[in-house]
Amino acid sequence: MSGWGAPSDRREPDRVPAGPDAPLADHLRPTGAGGVVGPHDPRPAGRGRTVAVVVLALLLAAALVAATYLWVTTSRWQESSAGWERSSRDLGERVANLQEDLDGATGELTAVREQLTTAQSRITDLANEKAQLGDENVASQQYLDYQERVSTAAGSVAAALESCTDGQSELIGYLATPDAYDAADLERFSSEVDALCQSALDANDALQKELEK
Image 1 (cartoon, rainbow, N blue to C red):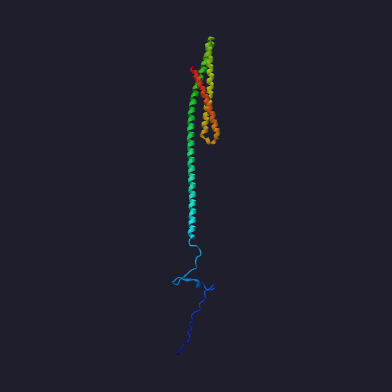
Image 2 (image 1 turned 45 degrees about the horizontal axis):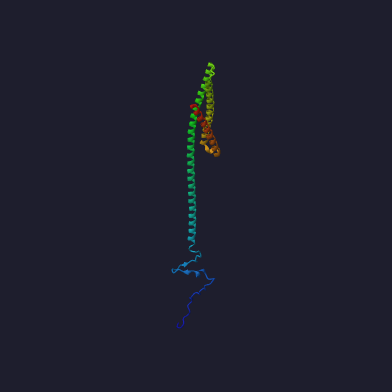
């Protein structure tokens, strides 16, 4: 058949205009190999890195705080330990000195008691001798009076030294557990013992000088 041929039954599909109501496929962009790219992610690309930096900064700050706390705690413990050792050493020296003083006072107390015993024996002997001889000699009477005064003084010194040693022994016992007592009370008692012992030692010195005449 010549002329124009019959039109072909195959027609090119109508294009669907792109618009708000167009199918989703019309909004996908080709990738060049038949694939498509999904919708664009609206979130900023650097947001994840920012969060990571903030977290690391917080962790670093926490680590610095912990390190500072440990350093301060360690420093305070070292200072406290040094103070405790110093106090313990001072207390040990104080007790040692007090024990030495106690030993000295005890020795002097023993000597004074012996002198007291001797003086009392002399008084007894002189009194008996005077009674037997009927001696009215002034010198004999004066010597007898002197021995009586020595005996009285020795008795007073012995009593003072005994109080001193008792106080020192008691103070040593207190210092063995100082935390169990009020610090001010311990210092007050220690001062009283020191004053008592000093008075006893002064009296003993005077007695010994008198005996040397």
